[in-house]
Image 1 (cartoon, one colour):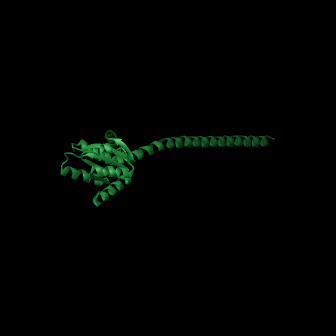
Image 2: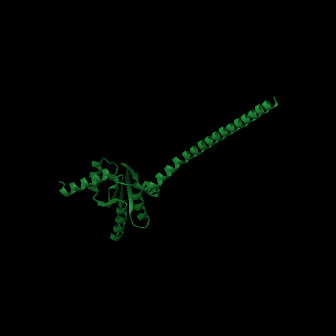
Image 3: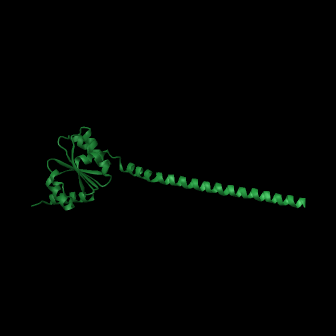
Length: 188
């Protein structure tokens, strides 16, 4: 029979899972307290919640949150990182910690309710942050627009130049014909 504490923990995990844009599961075997404290601090700065979870409770919470495919990864020591923000930032912090010899092994991830492998998490961690990606997309959209504006302004400059040349030509022709009429009137 479940205790009130376990029911509350499952409800808490379910809420975290449903509200997260990304969830990462990791094996934390062999990490010392100082390293975990350092990791938690970095994750907290990125607004990522990090918890060591009981696998049985996490399985129940995942079912209640509608996430399938995690049962095979919820074995052994498991820590979960939940982010409501940029999924890349959280993956990058975890992967950087693991790469720096932090004895953290990323098992899997869930991004927008889709389970991804540990290798896919590593690839995700290598992506630039969301802001940089958005700026790249914006530049990609702006470049053709600037080109179009340049072409259109060139066409308009050409049209204005042509109209000015026609006006100049008419003035010259008007001036010549007025001078011709004036000369003809003097001769007569």
